[in-house]
Length: 127
Image (cartoon, rainbow, N blue to C red; front, side, top):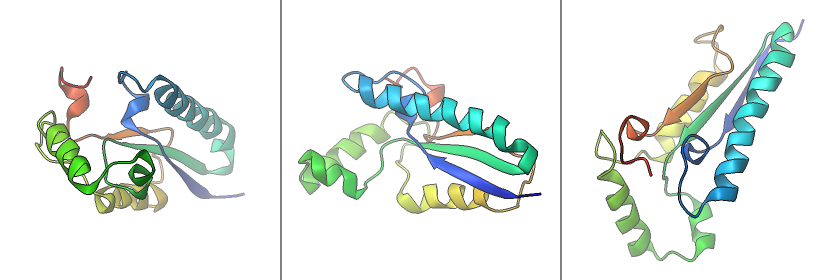
């Protein structure tokens, strides 16, 4: 018998449509379905599969988009106004959720797609 946990990192772009990000959103939604499928396939081996979906985060990936620091900070400030909690998450917030899924804190949690969007998905401001 095997045992383990797989945690995928996706994006809230796979949970709701975001203008001008069609290909990105489609690939993230595909990751969500892939996670569900492998959760079904690996369940008999006691391998849990979960996915976290953060909204905008300041990561090195944004450097490749040509943002200067001030532009990115302004974008995050604007994004925060759309969130129920009125602030953006940071990388350590997402890491905490990943560690929870990877741990044995809840051995029966599998095939879960977790939005880390500070309530954005509950608002009409999601797009």
